[in-house]
Length: 385
Ligand SMILES: [Fe+2]
Image (cartoon, rainbow, N blue to C red; front, side, top):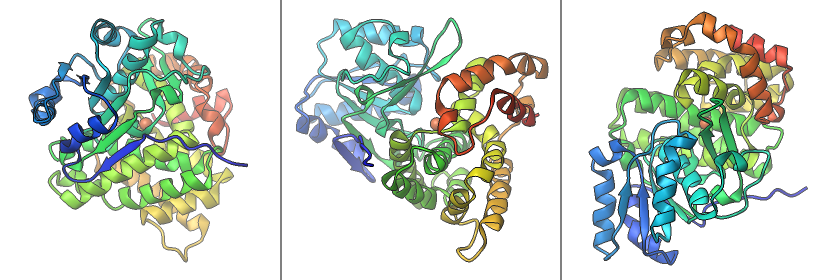
């Protein structure tokens, strides 16, 4: 059986990569980009830096900075209008996962119209929107190298997973310099998200030798460096490893899918506005423990790649150390429990049925090595309390 691998056409990787944007645009034949970002990127001067480096090549770029965290259908509407009414030939998506996910949706909706709900999974979106040049500033969602976007339906609060080559950026500029100013909390949340991508891609039923290779490489980079980047944001070697690890993890899960953690995480995020990486972090130890019996060799490989178990240790020992490590990581990175985050216990328990349904409907739990029933998903949610 063969596996189809989908990647951006250009990956510019390493210190200063974002400064090469004019050359990358030219190589793609694009000359009129719209920068889609958020207010923070404007405040930090990142949007202006991109504009300046484009201006040096006589390219003028407008900025749309109205994207929001965890984008919704209504939050992207103004961006869709900007694309419809402008004559842009490309989009520069600058920021964390939310601006990049917003840009992907805007690129497709702005070109083809319709309602975002029309594009949600199980539909596979092959229509390419405006070409996207992604410049991630977190390490990260991996959105710069995935064919996914997640947009929340304002009415139902459902986090809609949208899938297809139409959402794949044509280029990604992976510049760890842009992560040096990330606060510790965001470093932790996005870093655990990247670790989750690598682990889920590796244990996914859709894993291939190709995605395995990316996932293992990602875990080797992320495992020893996440704590370092969290404690010292200016630790450049740690930031560099996290950035590349995040991109490789993105490549792994874009081609092997995520699994139960992400399936269960999206409903928590949608209902209680928990940042994506944080809800993953809350779930990762419990879901790993649940899944190990059906994939003990695979999870043991994860433990060894992350550097928490030795090559000579048995799978059982490695698995025990993995679960212990995931709990220790959450403690050290100060990941709150749902209660500590401020979620009301009664509100959470009231929504268990619906969250479990949404998790199953997303399709992600089916990729898990141990496919849970509706009741087992509810059990895992309850373990978070
Ligand atoms: Fe994720």
